[in-house]
Length: 160
Image (cartoon, rainbow, N blue to C red; front, side, top):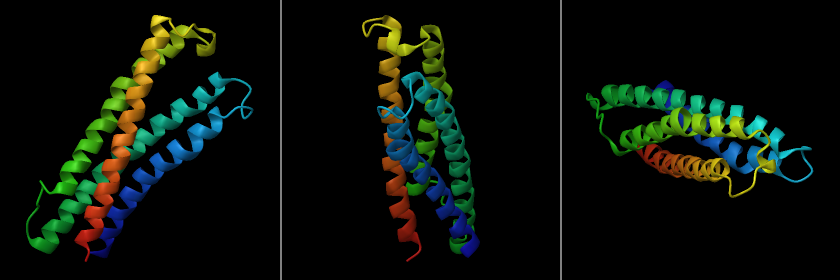
């Protein structure tokens, strides 16, 4: 039983901790003035890091769901597949996959078509679309983060 609880908590720690590090440490640091000579280089760091973060989230979500379902099966003799925490993790997974497989590739295509984005006028349609997608990417990650905090609370309550 403790192994399943540990896996559930570890999955949440990796996922939410990864988002926390990315949003509050990595991205602000590499985009801060004077850290890298070009903002384009910051994008070259952030893009693959975001991809890895998404895969960490997808794997963590699956580990959480499997561990939680098995925990419920052993503890309560039923799967309880549609609990609040499970539904929220499914939404988190859907948002993460949408960001990874839809938003990020479109942003990368636009970024590649522009070259150095800072040399593109703010009114250029590609830059406008890139900025719009960036807003959606940020909202998606933020939503996953806040839903994850709720799942942490729901999971902690289960172990009382």
